[in-house]
Amino acid sequence: MKSMRENSKRLAAPIFGLVLGAGAPTLANFGCSRDYPTCGNYVLEAGEECDDGNVENSDGCNWSCQNEVQCGNSLWEDGEECDDGNGSNEDGCLNTCVVGVCGDGHVQVGVEACDDGNAVGGDGCDAECREEGEGEVECGNGAVEEGEECDDGNEEEGDGCRNSCELARCGDGVVWKGEEECDDGNGEDGDGCLNNCERARCGDGVVREGEEACDDGNEEEGDGCRNSCELARCGDGVVWKGEEGCDDGNEEETDACLNNCEWARCGDGVVWAGVEVCDGGEGGGAGSGCAECEYEVRRVFVTKTKYEGDLGGLAGADEKCQEAAKKGGFVKEGERVEYQAWLSDGFLSAKARLGQEGWQGRYEVKSGGLVAVGWEGLVSGALEGAWGEDEDGEVKSTTVWTNTGADGSGLGQAHCGGWTAATGQQEGGVGSSDNVDAGWTALGQVPCNSSSSIYCIQVK
Image 1 (cartoon, helix red, strand yellow):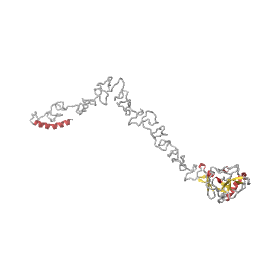
Image 2 (tube, rainbow, N blue to C red):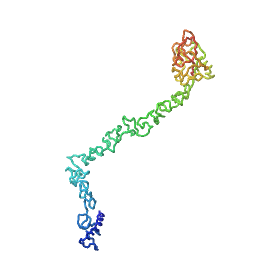
Image 3 (cartoon, rainbow, N blue to C red):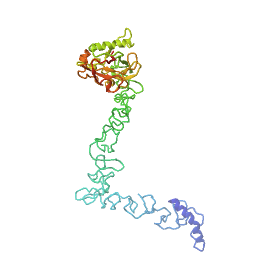
Image 4 (cartoon, one colour):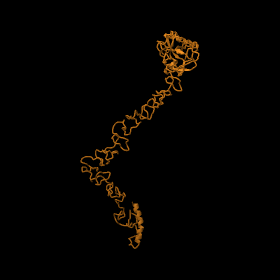
């Protein structure tokens, strides 16, 4: 402030001198050498704080050229608490350049609700310049009164101060804008809004009822709870550590990963496509038809010799098959290979006699032609190829004594008296060696004095 006045007075001094030089009366000692200052000559001399060219007071520079304090000039000068340069007494700075306080009789906007010029209560305005009701606190008047946590004087419920003059907090049932995602005001953590006022989501560690099966709050996909908040299970395409060996997420049972989420292996009872030709399960050793997941082969043939119905019973028919097998080279010297007849009488069926159920290997004729895969294929009612080669490997089209249905069961009394009679008064059931449908074993009946071949099958 002083520098501005000094500059203005230095500029004004020569101008004043010019005016005085134009016929004006000469001031005493003007321009003369002296040892003391002359106040009022526009020259800032030793001992002067200012010199405005006059000796008037109340214009900022008094009669002795000392600065005067001016309230209202927007300058904060010595002795002033404030100076905002305006005429308002309600903006924190009074017109006397004193800071407004409670009890000065002026209501400071945004700070005081009232100001009655004193610092006592009970007269409508309390000692902290808050309005008083009839003994009651008034929420919403902008003044924080006894019993109130806050009072912002507005009707905005979602800001930091509730309309009940309570501070906003998580769990009060009102969403605090900018601070909370949600606020349902209950203590239920498993609904859509958590107790920390964040919206429920998969991965927050809290199971949302009706929406999530689990929620472990981590990003580990291979534990018991998936990152989709679904319980881990076989077939979901993710390997559940410690529980599953594999999980390819498909329903293909014959690939490298079984539908029980175990790795495919020989002996699991399922044929691994492209790797195994068969799988006998845990009991798939020698004699199962599938040893080490490779097919065993059992030979079948139809006898070159034809016989009447008197075969010597079932035992006699079996002996004929064993002898024919030796002649045909199916049984080598010293081998324990056994053949029996595909034949049923009134007591024993071929199915019961042969004991082949569960066998999984291949039934082949001498040339290697496939007749059936496993016992199930043999009794399915449809062969893969005709059982029509004899023990020498020659194709033979003939009737064959059987009295046996396509499923291996006996067909009643057409068994030539237990395969001991060769009369025309009795009949025996026969099949046809060149058929592949059920007629291969159940084609009809012929008199027992007719001649037919016998089906022979390896049983050991």
